[in-house]
Length: 406
Image 1: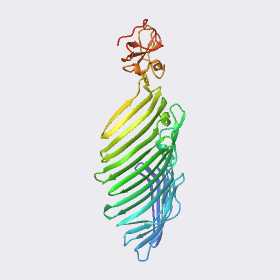
Image 2: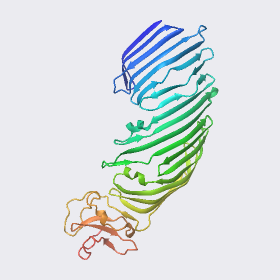
Image 3: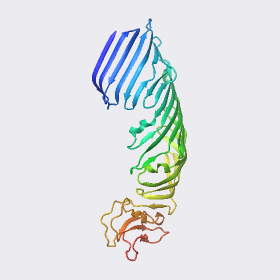
Image 4: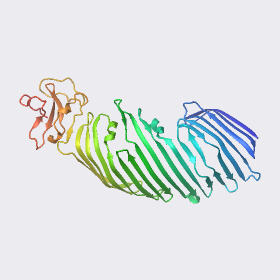
């Protein structure tokens, strides 16, 4: 027998194929199938080709064959079959068996069937391994001037049976490092992250254990169990945060000159997947934050979050004189020299907030103004600092310039 089919100009789902050529020749007992497809280079899939060889036995109850060649060129890389993938099909029993093979990505990474795969109407098993997949695959999804480095590996064992039963066990190891440039063109890099974990699931329960370690920046661990995942989805588990440091992530916030602090917590998980409940406490200590675009300078703050099921309470502690408000008002208009306050200054230009007193002396955030072309701060005083009006060493004497009315 001999069959040839050619298709031109096929479009579907955002993919255009210029040419598709399919050819089949030989006999039922021994034949060869080839497929070639090509597309413009700017398409998600630009080329695909395969060669399949096989044949029926004399009783026509068993088919044996091999996928001799497989080549795929796509946006994500160029895939090639390392060697022939052998398979057999028992037509009477309705079962199939595939021998181990590997599909390699020329830019890095492999997908391998590590054990023979058996499949039938009664069930089946498969063991897959994903090796050395580069995290650079994330680059198209990251902001401009960001880049990712590292690799991911995954082992997956799965099986299924009659009546809809199934199981899956997975082990994950991943390493990721991010770097790039900030808004001012300065280079930055984040601590390398290492993720390891195990996932075990079947039609009755699912368990997950993950641990994320950040290079010299703390760690995070999650253990969870879900009973009846396809139904009620009852959830139990624990999430712990240990010594997560904020300082390495300062460069991600535009205008942030100082960012320090340590995050820790222990949270119990309960409830259902649709309505999870969390109980425990998350604490941020030693918080220091300042910068041109930050309205409040924090010098030694603490933030506590108490979780109680579906509710939470937040408590922020910043001792007196350890936090100062900074004006974030719009840029000023022309400055007048009449002695009366005019337009507020802009934090991004004149930095008037540098002359403001500590918020520990103010009942509300200081307001930045200019008097006689000098920056001043209007502060409504607390009980610890009687009086109100213009308070700053750089302001004209109060006897010359009385406090304005509110």
